[in-house]
Amino acid sequence: MRSLLLLFMGLFLVVNCQAQNGTITGKVTIKSSHAPLAKASVFLSNATFGTVTGEDGSFTLSGVRPGQYELVVTTVGYEDYMQTILVGAKPVTVEAEMVPKVTELREVVITSGGSWKRNYDAFVKDFLGNSEDAKKCRILNPTDLNLLNHKTKRYLEGYSYDFLNIDNYALGYKVKILLKSFKTDYLNHVISWTGKVLYQELPGSAEQKKKWAARREELYYGSAMHFYRSLAANTMDKDGFVIRILQRKPNLKRPSEELIQQKIDKFRMTNRDSAQYWFNMEELSKYDEFLIRQPLKVEDVLHKTEDPGVFAIAFPKYLYVVYTRRRETVYFKDLFRPLDMENFETSIITLYGNYAFFDTNGIVLSPGSTLVEGAWSLAKVAEMLPVDYVPGDTKN
Image (spheres, rainbow, N blue to C red):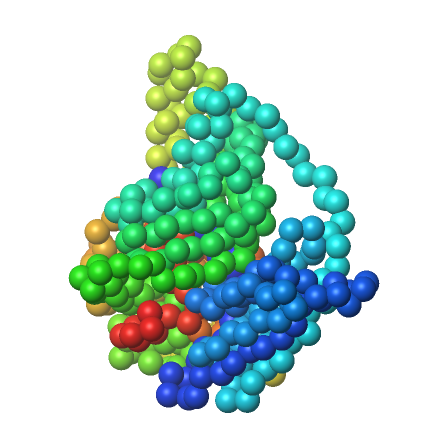
């Protein structure tokens, strides 16, 4: 079964490692009264910088690499405050005014212990993954999750009441995720989620930290983050990436996924021959595909924008990305691969719309604009790296 992953994370611009690190200071107040708000969480989304406000509402984030970030302020009873900031040599000052949260009615379902456990196990598999890295992760507060399984419509959805606290002993991070939405579409095999993330270093021995650093680098090279950074820097050839156009058309011999699943459910227990027929239909490829062998150049897909450090990528629907530094070890049923092509790690980007926007940190900025399958789809939360990660950086 093909594994797909929608990239829904709004992250921000790259940093110059040799530039002077910056400082962000500010004060958090209640908008209506201008009173200071203490103990509010202040952090740079998807990065490793975070703190809480003091009794006077003030905060400081120091040692921040230059670049563009999303600063997030969150506390119980108030709407989240978000501001895009550009960090440089000069200190950045932020005045965050918090507005009381409007009560939002969301569906809360009371389930039996067995039902919640099944939903939670499914969530962990889809959110953290089922890799060796995922086995080294632990969600510390699972009861802060609300999960609902829509069995007839074949999807699982959920959100968190508060930050999910995850200890990732594969990479050495404590990950705090304010999960706004989560969905697994079992019919189309698509996993998507949105939220705000803070990374913190886990304490560990020198030997542990050495292993964490090695695993972080291993995950980084060949990743989507590495690819987009390489594209922005025009170093694809040196970094081992080759891109081509993939052409796809629906396989007219294959019924719709919805019909296939309906028939399997109908005949599974009543008619073995009919059930087998529909199982065979399920195994058919969804597409008729053709790969244009001529590799693309960076200038064929990359476009500058008016925003410094933000780029647009454009191509005819499907981009076939090969990473030649590592061979594929996983079989993807619906990933097209010509028989005469070497078995290198391969990912496919589906583009929705005319462009997708990304920054020099290697992060897609436009939610819902891309979908990935193949090697990149294996990277779940257990394999996520912070936006300010740089290979070989002693800080990380």
